[in-house]
Image (tube, rainbow, N blue to C red; front, top):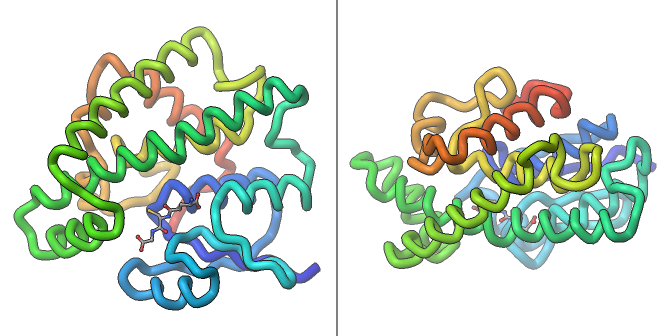
Length: 233
Ligand SMILES: N[C@@H](CCC(=O)N[C@@H](CS)C(=O)NCC(=O)O)C(=O)O
């Protein structure tokens, strides 16, 4: 098998969960950077949709981070990123779906809102780009904040007295939820490099709320204990 190629967007948590899984499995791959506003058409031509990550492995083109993680688990089962029992695996899926399709989507809406409130042409340009791509309105942002607050409360209670979201071991649930929290508060520099401007726009009041400090401390521990490399562009 030739080395697979991963097209990923540096700051995106969807891309980060896949890079994390590849690093965890010590699976070599070729990196290709996706640049927002530049590479959309090329990705669309390749996959029929305009999102990354995308994996190109032998004759397969696989868009969608969960499909890529399934391919990886099958291709390189050790060390496993899924727990042993079907019941535990079902819980991993639930957390992944909450992270990808609720936490990630809603924190992205809040991120767009923060961009649009910055009085700077560059921030405005990206706020408009992402706002159009993902659908933004001030009402959506308020709804998103309520949903994210509920999810953070649920995460806090789930993690009380335990180190991992499912079973007693690090799984896909942990490496999905941990990066998805990054649009509320950047992952510390020692684990994931971002410029001060990029950190600033990732900081939401919920990321500084003392009620959820334990959730972000858990996220940083997952990076420290399981990320295995410093993430740099
Ligand atoms: N269902 C997809 C969603 C991936 C996704 O939302 N990707 C966004 C990252 S923020 C993207 O590629 N955006 C491209 C762009 O903004 O131009 C997955 O899980 O891989």
